[in-house]
Length: 576
Image 1 (spheres, one colour):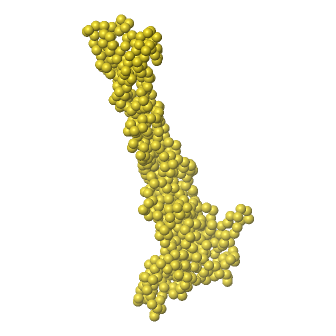
Image 2 (tube, helix red, strand yellow):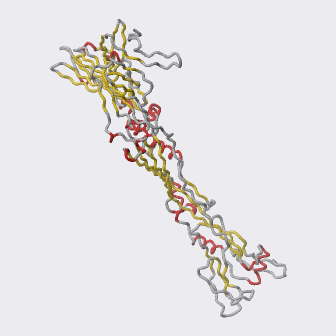
Image 3 (cartoon, one colour):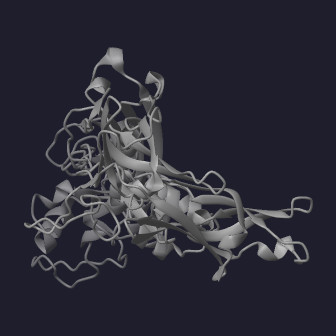
């Protein structure tokens, strides 16, 4: 015997790294047992009657039920029993050694009084859901872990914290439950090296049961469609330049002096500004260039004074017109997670899910008209994307899809019953191995049901393990990079604006002046001195043409990323 158990019936530290060796449950020992029931710290064991049940299941609240006999003359107020703390312990004695194991810790939730039999029937729970509900969001994050995104789930504010915990758990291959002592914990679904081994003759005869899932419930492929939308802010500046041809290629006063003998009408500042704004643009900065000089005594050095009192006539012009617009960009991610069977079309059992992630930004709402309030900035393109949100949403749906596949592949349940004294140390965190009654199986323990019959003296625990089957290898669940949605920079026409001059039949070089073209951009005006009374006068105006923005720069921009992730499922032992 060792600490109240048969030799090889308790974990021993290995001589190497300190990891525990399996407990090999052995048969052939006699046990006596009894229960100890504490309610609000008071021992009421002697009042127990009939059968005491305990049911602890992975991912669910543990429950227990028992009857208490109240002797005649005892005043019973059933409602006063609700909420009392309950502790149930199992005490086993073998070869004079006593071992105590906690079977349940919780609260009495539903007392029912039978005045005829004077039995107070008590239903108890460890109140997993209510205790989780009482936790703060930060406490749930620390306890549960996993991934969460407000773009995948609903916002936390004003919602159930239990639902929030379940959402985080849905991204993990793990479950939340309580230990027999009531401690909340999260445990992995995957089987480890066995903690307990039940060999030949250790299980009750004909207690072995196998529950297999229906093929249609074993999801082996999850197809995800994630649409990630965000605004793209464009600013396109277009430069316009005009130089009067009469300046002869010169600039400044020299160009003015070249223009002066054949002077013409000139554009004003208002005309230039109206031309830019009339083309649907906003002037960036101000109009620049070279203005017609004001009055000067001898600007050209020829002894002739120059008289001009108008200060907004231009011989050369440089101006920038800008436009802003918002383009919608949608990145579509078609992601598939599949086991080996899920990769073959004929053996697929498919689940599908879609998620839409929209980035909203006040700048996008105000962008189109913002140049009028702040006429500045260079040509640019800016994506109002949120990489952190994209990453959080994608890893969330990936992990949830993985958990869905793994959960579907652990639906093979193997159950067997043993005397409770032989399974006293077994908990839901343990991996169990069975080799008895023609069955060999290994899996994580997912359920423990205790039945203590106080009349017959039978104390039996039914253990259930989940066996994973699937095979294959797994790819890392890394968030895919964004598909390319970029466009080459827009460029405006670089040539200067043309000039049309009328009011004469022949130009200063003696060439006939061509007819006026109303469709032609640039400046149109007339010479100051006509050479013929029949000469046609041209309208005085200046026009600019804004470049057409191609549709691909304005319409929704889309791109798609397709990725397949292989999901491997362990092949736990299952032989019958």
